[in-house]
Length: 178
Image (cartoon, rainbow, N blue to C red):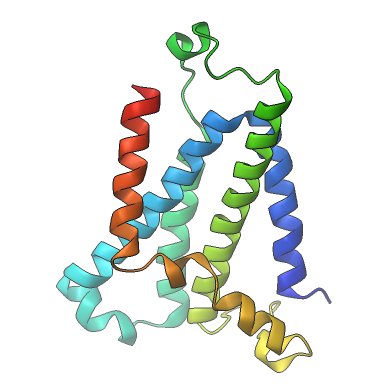
């Protein structure tokens, strides 16, 4: 049996390697897609009357799958970034230098933390609705997983921080990509 915290570290390393091979510009799009997903979930849970009033009454696994499905969909489209020939022609986003690889590695690790951490947070909120995954509170890793769950992205990217994150992401897209 592997602890969820070890699995998260492994996935962060895998996403870092993927980010190193894709480049920092494409990884920024994935970061922004996760921020957008957290913003959408936040807005839906705060301002849509059905979710605001009945969200706690929904079965945990249905609510988990709605959140996870939205995350997976937006991350999928973030990784399917368009071919930007105009930007590629300027050599502005080249991936042939060491600093570009390192920045891609770093942003890939951040994306791994955002994606896997968000899924883990939603799974924890749903009460670990899978038989194959044991609630870490009942294991020898309870103290470490409780510390990690307190630092997962939906914990610190709630209201109002998510609004600032969306504004910064939007400004970054306008300045760098347009």
